Length: 248
Image (tube, rainbow, N blue to C red; front, side, top):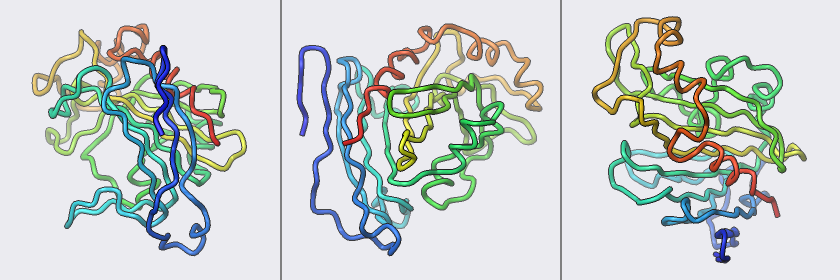
């Protein structure tokens, strides 16, 4: 059910006929039921989907992405929708009917995104490391109305220069929020593709040879310290969308 108001679009999950779970442990748990209040800039092509444990959310044989917990996903676009993933601003909010202990640990003691090591494919889909390497920046602890979380900027690449790594570019940069609800029953994973006007555009990117060199790079320092409103979309605006989440 989609309910429009003058200031925001409120998206509510709706029960539907979804095949049964393949896991006895989670077979009686339904996909989470929640609402989001979505401001106009994020309102393009908003869709809500629900999955039970063991369902293939990719549905693109021979490739499969099997969720390990009941999950509800709301996704859409900031601004204009584009077929080019490197130039659009797609976003999604996923809520899993499971408490992820690695997220709890990250909220409590991780010092940065490298140490938190949160990867949705590994945590909820049983997959190994898909990317050749990942970079993290701007690690922050957050407190939302629904629970505690960490946020960070993340880039991952399927291929990279031998024994080196790319400095984050606008085409591969994502802003992520990982958290656990106050009742410890659900894990929230939200993300949005973001860009910064002073970052390079793929493939005109810089290469460094170590994590230490990465952290000294001026573009890395820029995204670490600049105002959250310099990104498109604003990190503050996306935090507000995530903060509007209400479990039902």
